[in-house]
Amino acid sequence: MEIAVMSKLFANEDYASAFREGLKAFLENHGYKLDNIYNGDETSLFWKHFPTKTFVCRNETEAPGRKASKDRVTIQVCSNASGTHKIPLTFVGKSERPRCLKNVYVNCVQGTKKSWMDCNVFTDWYKNVFIPSVKKRNPDPEAK
Figure 1 (cartoon, rainbow, N blue to C red):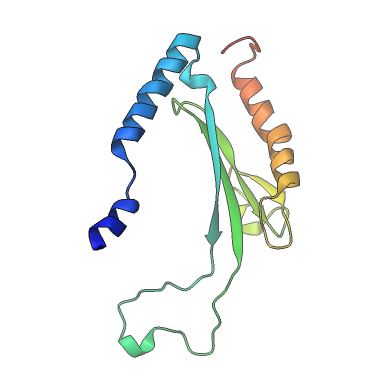
Figure 2: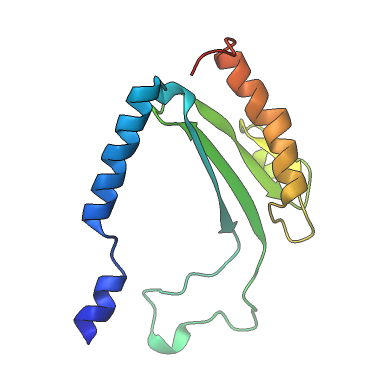
């Protein structure tokens, strides 16, 4: 029983390998370049959250008088498949330009009340950050 449960947690390597080879063949057959294929994703960073593990005594797992902080930012990352073009990071938080990011090269946007990436924030990022950055790098609209 334990082995069956564990096998569900791992990816099917044969399927992943077949998919990778099929995608590679598709891209080569249609003339797509890895420089023009982009992948983006978002992740959350709870930047004031206490660690869950520590090297102190077992009875000192919590700081006395403190609640778990849920202050967070959402970070949007994006790059092309060859790794030669990285879109500037986008931080979605409560303030439009946090002081801690004053001299850091990122695109900060004012997010939702809980600092989540929503449809409006993503559309704004896509139109005002992603498209201009890709056009600046590759001005030829006919390139695959």
